[in-house]
Length: 193
Image 1 (cartoon, one colour):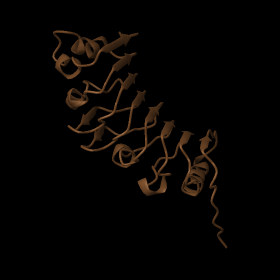
Image 2: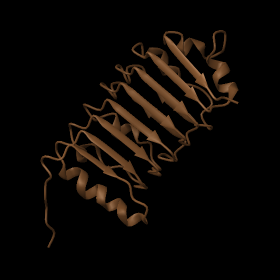
Image 3: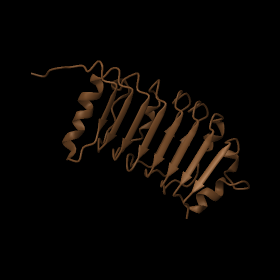
């Protein structure tokens, strides 16, 4: 007999598991049972993301590391109404394309992409209208910044670390992609090769 439970007062939840795939069922059971959760940290393979309606509507901060997602997580995550910080790091996504849709991520302020395997990232006009800080590290397959970033006028800092020099050169004044970031007050490029 299955039992159902709710953790009505739980506000922060973290998973860090070093076992086989059986642990991924924990997120499917616990997260929908936490209606007031506002921070979620998952540091293990989950392979498939929950549906938007299974996340707490109050979720403001989400960190996915080593998640090994095969499908683009953005169509699900961009619908979380209060999400302000998103960290996709260390093999959290194995797909080739990532898309941020128009009207998606309305309150997102911080986006961190570290060591994810994407080839192309598209940002539609009207996506991420509150984004202030974008950090991209070690995303070697990514050849260029999305054209749609030029529409994210709230962006205050773009931080690029451990990327090919050819990537950062495109963003320098006079480079072919400078028009995408010329409105950003702080461009920080470190440890490029």
